[in-house]
Length: 74
Image 1 (cartoon, rainbow, N blue to C red):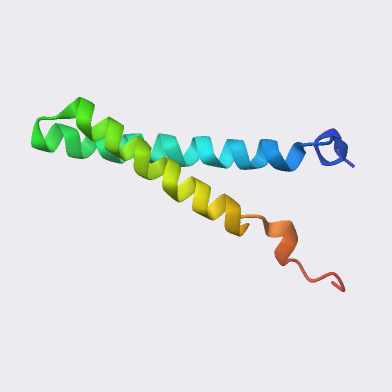
Image 2: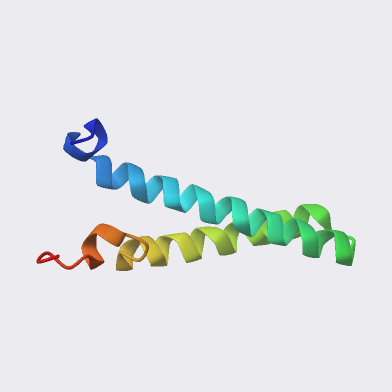
């Protein structure tokens, strides 16, 4: 087993990592819209906010964890 699987709190770290990914994606999309509309700071802020919301919702629902979806008999 890998060390990250046995470390207490590793699930919390995975959720935090996933949240960080969604914040980065949201900020990137927000930057794009900010450049288009001439409001870069506002676009980044709104995009990061949307990223936080999406990341939190997906983390609370448990999406993206492939180990939960595996067939235990396989």
